[in-house]
Amino acid sequence: MTPHVEDRDRHDLEACLAEIDFALTELLEARAVHYVGEATCAPVALPLVHTVNRMIRLLEEIVVFLLPLARGELSAPLPSPDNNMAVPLVEMHARLSRLTRQTQEIARGDYSQRIDFMGEFSEAFNSMVVLLEERERSLTDEIARRKQAEDDLQRERDLLVAGPVVTFRWNVDDEGTVEYVSPNISAYGYAPEEFTSGKRVYADIVDPADIGWISEEGNDKSRTGLETWVQEYRILDVEGETHWIRDFTHAVRDDEGAVTAYEGYIIDVTPQKAAEAALRQREEQLRMLSLSDDLTGLYNRRGLFALGEHTMRIARRRARKLGVIYVDVDSLKTVNDRFGHAQGDEALRMVADVIRASIRESDVVGRIGGDEFVILAEDDTGVTEDIVARLRRRVEHANAKAGRPFRLSLSIGAIDWEHGDQATLQELIERADQCMYDDKRAKRR
Image 1 (cartoon, rainbow, N blue to C red):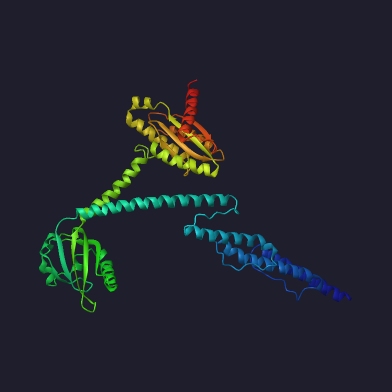
Image 2: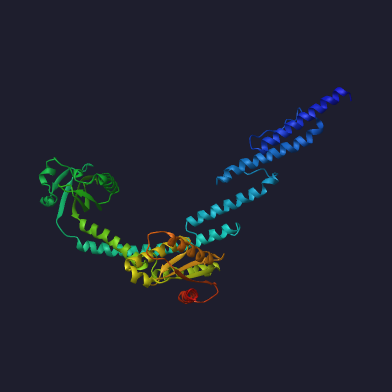
């Protein structure tokens, strides 16, 4: 081989290696995909070029597949079967697809779905399914109770309906042109002549927020052949005051079945609507009062035991520990005697705030006595000790703030309940209470 040919081959090889270096650098720095051209490379470098280009192609397939996958899109085409580097990603895609299908089944109400192929996520997912099933069951029960309450309320409301019944005959137009109205329309401050003369149409007295759906619904019902229907909506009297009315409408039809007019009557049900709203509000207040402590906003003893026993069942099902922490406010009687009960109440609210700031959202806390609190925390990683430590730190932090004539001091007892222990919640609280007294006695030494 002549020196000239050797120099040219060397030059081609160096250029090829430079292009390979450039392509790999572009790939490593995620700038662009650059394949190495074979035409300009020396024959000795072609096997390397083929390998590099194949690697770039396989990595490009992975990128095209992985970017949508990272956004949760599972519709991207799978890498080619010979792309061994993509095997873990393809497996992850399959598992995510399976998880998606299972999630859809859960959304349709199949709570039997469980997963066992994603480590800690599997446990969290399965726990979520259990909670969803329990919440749906609770919601179903609540809906049944609500339906019964609504049925009872409906019967009561029907019995209580009283007052003048105003009869109407309306034209078939959407405005509700009145052909006849009974004289007792005067109960709302209007004269019958205002309507029958065409000076006022029925739509004029209906709340603007209701007129659209009333007309649309009435037309739909009459088109389906329905003879009678009931609607509840708002009208305004002559003074602009709102009244809820129940409207019983009957479609008048000719021999061919075409609607020629509407007849019916309206009844003022404003008192019943107000009673319903007040009843719903009262039900909610009673529900909250039955489980909550007025002073601190925490659960009361009833609420703690209701939620606590549920928490124990979950911990037993998960084979988890349950931390039980008993907190007693030291010398609350002294605060009451020296500074008054208002300051004593403030001390209890401060303790409640300290506890809230020290626990997790999943933990259950209640005030079970005048100056006694109980915290229940599912525990497999020493969280009980962490909560106790946070309580002590936060109490000191609260004491460091100026403006209070007293210092907070807490005696704390904590135990861990093993899921195999058959003790009741009351027995666990008593054990933690004994530990609290040990802490209190230790302070007096």
